[in-house]
Each structure stands twice: as structure tokens, then as C-alpha cells.
Amino acid sequence: MNFRYDIGILRAIAVIAVVFFHFQIPYFQGGFIGVDIFFVISGYLMTSNILKGFHHNNFSFRTFYSKRAQRIVPALLFMLVGIAIASAFTLLPKDIKTINEYAISSLFFVSNISYYLKSGYFDNASQSNFLLHTWSLSVEWQFYMIYPLLLYPFRKRLIEHRYQSIILFSFLILFSFLGMLYFNENDNSLAFYMFPTRAWEMLLGGLVYFLQKEIKINTLSRGMICSICYLVLCYCIYAYQEKDMTWPSCYTLIPVFATACIILVRWEYNLFQSSIAQFIGKISYPWYLWHWPIFVFTYYFALTGHGVTLILILSSLTLAILSYYLIESNRRLASLKFVAISASISLFICVGISYASTHIQESETQYFSHYNENYRKKFLNKQFRRGTCHIDVEHTFEQFNKKGCLFIHPNKKNILLLGDSHAGALAYSFKTQLQASNINFLQATVSTTYPLLETKGPKNSVKVIDYIYKTFLPKNAMHIDKVYITGFWGSGQYDYPTLKKKMESLIAYLKKHKLEYTIIGQTPAYTMTYGDILALEKKLNSKLEQKYILKQANDYNNALKKDFAGNDYLNVADYPFIKYQNRECYMYDDDHLSIFGADQLVRYIISKTY
Image (cartoon, rainbow, N blue to C red; front, side, top):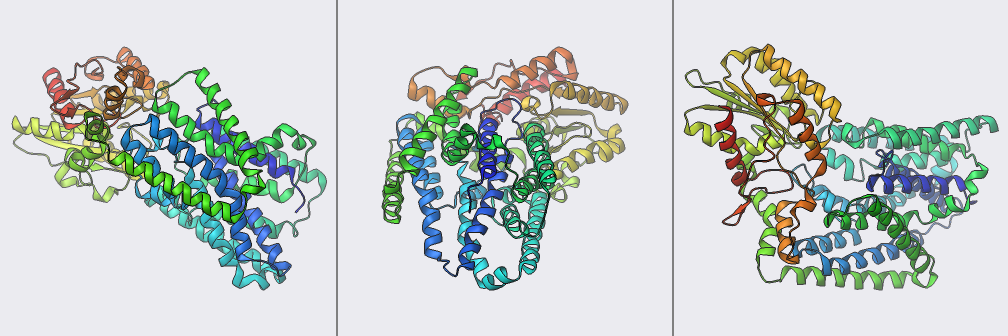
């Protein structure tokens, strides 16, 4: 294949989009589409590679797999070992163990499966997972493993019957795409992480290989189509926002199709030959490898500011360039023997560091750093009443127990708690304290969805909120003595002007139905789990809590308490929590109160408002 500058440009666009998105640089909020661009490119190149082998009757599975390993593994090992060693000297023991476990799953290219099995709303580890980005490498490697095996039995037809090949690929693309749509509705984490629901993107790149000889386009049309498609990619990078959509979804078609069209049309602008742009394309793989772990280190130690962003870009670029010249371009490191030996040594290092981290003597640092995971196992279902009165992303609307959770007692006062997981965290405390006063407690709480009119979020969560506002409260308002409403107001799910308008609409609705209500304000929020903050304070012998306070949550709370007051918005941010007592933390993660913390807050809320 002649060198294609357009593919180099696409790689550059993809890696810049992903890196700047993760570094939270303005105007790149849709940069996550960069991974999808990479998938299409991989599908096209691998199809070209395999089909040319079939055509010349010299395709070798051993050669194909060894070349993929020699291309991907050395740079990956360099990154994994570097992160494993750095973590051993800087991180908490449980995080060292986690990193090395993930390093092993990344080394065997099953990290996407590992992350899926541990994913979910109540697992907040994604932002602090140093190797989260390796999920896409695992998906690509699984594609490399399966793809030639899938094509090989049809090799003669693929060469001799191009139209049948187009039909076959179209069918496979449709099958994978429909599977993605199904799981996007029913298990979004599976749709995101798993190879079968991502295969359509790579297969579309493969379809381009067959279409490129069938489609004849004049020079002017090529230029116009290419220009439009590049503009589409830029628009998606600028306009898409992960908080407004699930991914992958129908929206993924747009950047994926635009990328496929660019490769299909093959229009080479002179600008594409820019040495800087092509160099970024060349180092796109090592830059992708290094940028995320470096970002997570700054997140882990709460380093912020424009200067930090510049350091992130420069340091990740430097490591990418070193990796490219010392590892990827070094032919002595590209032998299959070296790859196998290096992988074995890396595996030994990761296992050794992981083992050592688990045999550190028990201490307060150890206890605090494991507080979150231990708490979840022991108390989370009890605290939230998950799967019945609290609908998480893994639950359906039908699982919401309307009769039990919204039972109206004819001879008692009835109080309803409504909201997202921040309301759910208060559920057990409200239930026990109200029942002690012979008051009936009702609960309707969900995940990642504000308790607002015409809200947005996961489908089943939205259904619960809509049911309360459109059906339950209009029918039962006269029987409800009080409604407590709260959410993670500072999450940024809406910009503040929009949130303010929606809050005003909600208050108007509550007054229209003559409901007594209190909107509970933003509770404290951090950028790291509170137990980890305490553990780091113990390890470093330094006060760190203020560094980890989530500024966005504070800003939203300050604006809300200014614009609303009294029952319209009960400010609780300054409540003097007892934050730690008898080995209990007032928060179990970075922004959800534990039962210990919720008990304190609910006593205060009831005393102030009821």
C-alpha cells in the first residue's frame, strides 16, 4: 500500500481529540470520538493487509499475529512497567495492587472485559484508573485475533466475488450495530467495552476496502466530500458531550461514517504532507498510551491549573517521542522472541509488585484506603434499597416497587424522598428516623438523573422521575405531607442557567400541586474518595482535604443558595459534620454520604424543616 497522508492526518486528529478531551481543554468535549476514528482506520488497514495476503496466496496467521504483537506490545510493555514502578513509590497500597492487576489484564488484552465486569455507577474508580484507556487496545487486539479467522474460510469468495463480499460485510456491520443499539438501552457498559458491539466500526473500515474500487468520483467531488467530512469530525469534537448522550449510540454513526468516507474518497491535500501533522500521526499510538496515566497522576494528587495542563501535554509528548524512537523504531526490539521475553519479565514485575502491596502490615492508611470498597460490600444495598426503591443503571423501570416504595398510609403522615443517588444515600437514615416518629416513608431515587421536570439521564431512571411528576404526585398530592428533593446539583449535568430555570419550573410545579417541600442543597464533594484522602494524609503526614474539594460543586452550591432560599434550597454545605469517628467516615466515596454521615445530616434536615 502506498503511504497515505490522509490516514496520518486522521490519526493525528484522533489522538489530539482524545488527549485534549481527557486533559479537559475547552472545545474538545467531544474528543472521545477519537477512539472511534482509530477503530475505523484499524479495520481498513487490517482488511487491506489480510486481503492482499489472500490475493497473493501467501497469507500466514503466524506472520500476521507476530507483526501485530511486534507493533503493539513493546510500547505497551514500556508504559505498563513504567507505571507499575512509579506507582510502587507514590500510591496507596490498594491502588498499587489495582494498577498491577489491571496491567496484567492489559498485557493479556482483556482489560475491556475486566473493566466491564467492574463497571457501574456505584464504581467511581474510572477517573482514577491509570490504565482505563487500555480497553480500546484490548478491543483492537480481539479484533486482530478473530478477524483473519473469520475471513479465512471465505478467502476465495472475498477475492473473486467483490459484491458478495460487500453484502457479507454489510450484514456483519448491521448485526454488530443492532447489537450495540440493543445493549446501549439494556447494558450500556457492555455496549461501550465489548468487542462485538464495537466490531461494526472496524468492519465499516473493512467495507471501505471493497468499496474503494467500485466507487468512481471525480476530483472536485472528492475534495468537497473530504472537506465536508473533516468539518463533520471537527463539529463532533466540538459539539458532542458525553453527559448528554450514551456512547456508543446512533450518534456514533456520524464520526464513524465521516471517517470511512475520508478513507474511501482518498483526497490528499498538500497540507496533509505537513511534517508536524504526519509526525503527530506517527506518534499517535505512544501518545495515546502515555497521556492518560500522566493525567491520572495529576488527578490523584489534586494538581490543577493551566500550568498543569501545559505540563501534561509536554510530558506526555516527551514520553511518546521517547517511546517512538527508543521502542517502536528500534528493530532489535521488534523480534517475536524479544516481545515474548519482555512480556514475561513485565508480568513477573507486575505480579511481584502486586503481591508486595497486599502484604503491607495493616495500618490506618490501609484501613482508610479500603474503606470505600468494604463499605459498598457491607452497606450499600441496605442504605439505598437498590433494585426496589432505588433504580441504578443496571435496573429497569419495572423493578421499581411502586406498591412498596410509594405506599401511602391512610392513618399516618407520609413523607416522600425524591432524587438521584445523593437522595438515595439519605434513604436509610430518613426511613429509620421517620419511622421512629411513626411517620410513613416513601422513596423514589435513581442514578445519574436530576429530580427535575423533563429531566435527562439513563432511560429507566428518567422513567421513574417522570412517573413521579406526571402520574404519582398529581394523583396523590393531597396525601403527601412533605416532599424532600435532592441531587448532585454540582455535577454539571446542566449548565447553571439551565439548572436555575429547571429549578424554578420545579418549584412552580410543587406550588401548583400545593405540596410542602424542601429542596436539600449540595452535600460536600471531592475529587477523590474521602477514605483515600484520609489515607494519603496519614501516609504523607499532611492535611490534604482542601486540595480535593470539588470546585464545581462548590460553585453551583454558592449560586443556588444565592438564587433560592428557605425551603426552596436548604444549604447544607456548611453543616459541621463529624467526619470520622470510631473508624467510620462520613462519606464512603467522593460525594456520597455514608450512613454515619447521612444520619447526622437527616437529623439536621428534619429539625430545620419538619
